[in-house]
Amino acid sequence: MKSILCSLLLVLPVTAEHHTSGGELPAGLPAKLDPKALAEAGFETLFNGKDLTGWRKTGGTAEYEVKDGAIRGYGEKIKQNTFLRTEKEYGDFIFTFQFKFNDKTGNSGCMFRGLHKEPSKKYPEGRVTGYQCEHDNFKTKQRSWTAGIYDEARRGWLDPAKNISEEEKKAFTAQGEKLFNWDGWNTIVIKCKGNRLQTWLNGELRADFTDTDPEHATPKGFFGFQVHSGKTGDILWKDVYLKKL
Image (tube, rainbow, N blue to C red; front, side):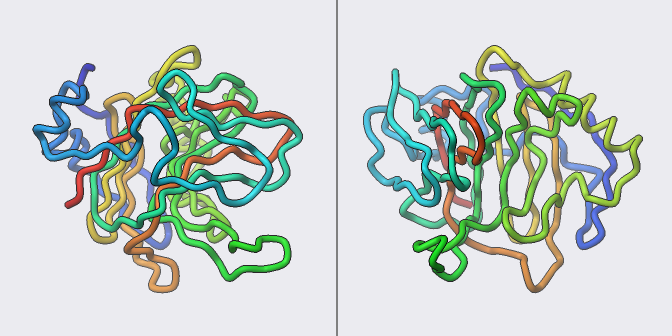
C-alpha cells in the first residue's frame, strides 16, 4: 500500500484549532498495512474476519453480517441510523480499516469515541452520538467529503467547518474526488491523541481538528460502522486494526 505525503487544506473551525503541519501518516503506522507488519508495529485486530465477536448492533433496522472476510452493513427502507459498535471503548489510538460501497447511494461513516445519549422511547439503547469519519455516497459527489469529521447528533460538521467559504468547500471536495475509489477499497486512518483528531484517506490528510468545546469534547468511546437511514445501503469494512497510544 503506498504512503504519500499529504497536501494540506486550510480550514478554520470556530471551536477548534486547525493545524497546518503534521500531515504525514502517523508515526508507528507501517507503510505496508498487512497483518504481519501491523502486529510488529503493535496493532491489534478488532475484527477476526469470521464473526462479529466484540461487536453489537444498535440503532435502526439495517443488518450486519460477515461476508467473504469483511463486515457487511445492508438494508432497504432503513429506519434510523444503524450502527455496529464495539463492546469496548477506546481513548487515544491509531485506528485503520478499509471500506467500499456495494450500493453507491447509501451514506455511511465510522464512529470513533462514540457515545450513547440517554435512552428514550424512540432509542431504547440511547441515540448514538459523537465523532464520525464520514463516508460520502455517490449522490453527494458534488460534496465529496469522505474522511471529514462530523459530530453525530450534536454539532454537525467539525472539519470542514460549517462556516468555511465556498472556495474551501470546493477545495475539500476536489481533494476527495482525487483520492476516493468509487469502485474499490479505500483506506482510512484515524488518530486521536488528547483533543486532537486527525483522519487520512488513501494516504493523504483530510481532517485535523482539535476540539476545544468543553461541553462536547469527548476523550473516550466506542467505534461504530454506520448504515445511514434511507432507501438502501450496502457497505463493506475489513482489515480493522487498532494501536492504543
